[in-house]
Image (cartoon, rainbow, N blue to C red; front, side, top):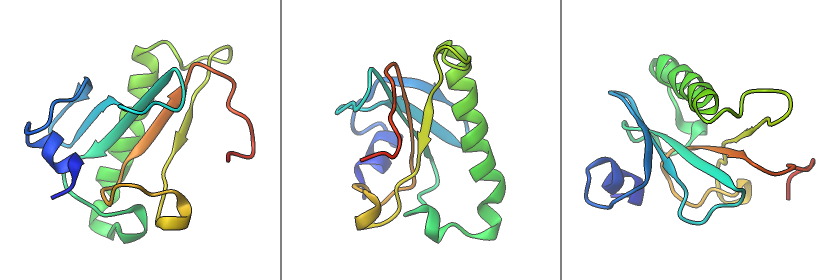
Length: 114
């Protein structure tokens, strides 16, 4: 069981900013920006590269939820802005084998990323 599955199950506490039937969003314990939120599906999909066609609606829901959270935090405007990141596999920076979206904001995010 991954750490994210334990958070979904309530076995590990988290600073939750959003929860619905399909997903959970919480503040990262090791933030890489002033705002760093992880958005995870409650269904465990190891990584985006392993998502199946039947996961299409869930994947869309995760992205729409990211936009809603950005709206709620007043980040969804040209002056603030935000970045969404999905890591896939070891060289892609994946650290937990449970699909998650990083919502990063609150500082200038350079390109290309590290």
